[in-house]
Image (cartoon, rainbow, N blue to C red):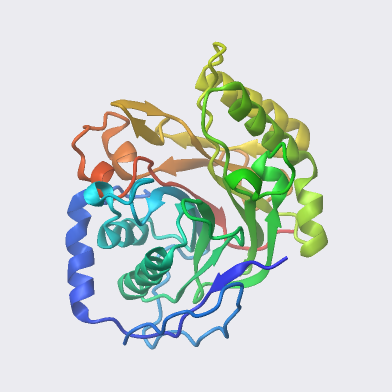
Length: 352
């Protein structure tokens, strides 16, 4: 199974990008966790991993590994129609990711038309400059049909080594079978070994959206796939530490099931499958129509000893900064996303 892997030579960006990126922190990216690029001419291609930049990225969280996820809302168009009103501000997004100070971040709603591919390359370049890292990307290999959303993972190649990639079709919850049919989104698993020694599978998901019966059934089918997930991944690469993160779209149903009820159902399934959902603070990750919801989650396998049972994750961006009292005119909503990032820190040692 081919997965598109994007790599790039290390290079220095003009200093103006640093100034622009730092200035964009004013767009609501201040919440604490607390050389040109050659055009890519082929897909499903693994390019040689480049050497690290001359300036090594400082270790700001020694002994820990930090990961996150963010739905980037039709990146980079901002909506399904390509209007400029909500186009992604790449400087603001790069500043937000840099502020999270993570080693890897899952991204949902990536487009893959020519402009989108170039925008992802540009984002990685901004991150290289802001963090002194070497950011690489892996994107699912579903067809690049017009309007199709993809899931992907950005990780700092100066802090992590990619060991394996696996597409998890069952996490699409597709009644047609397969992860890509009907414009569905499979899970994207990437096994990483971090510089501290910790290695794990990071699986980025984006479950079906909607409160109608079909969408609810698809999410339930995807939830059920956790039962065999660890074993499926272990057949590709043997590590049983699994972190699943992204947009679960736990929005409830038209039949009187609330979003909180659906989260409870998810937790029941996870408990039986050997996983647990992390408590996230504060309790909102998405803004729509002036209301907030808890749609994005981080789920960890019980085999992951590098995370204490009492560990909690954090919600950043305007959700964290405002404690879920987000003003509808917050620039983040117009220029970055209608979702907020979720993140968690792990003990960087490999304890299994």
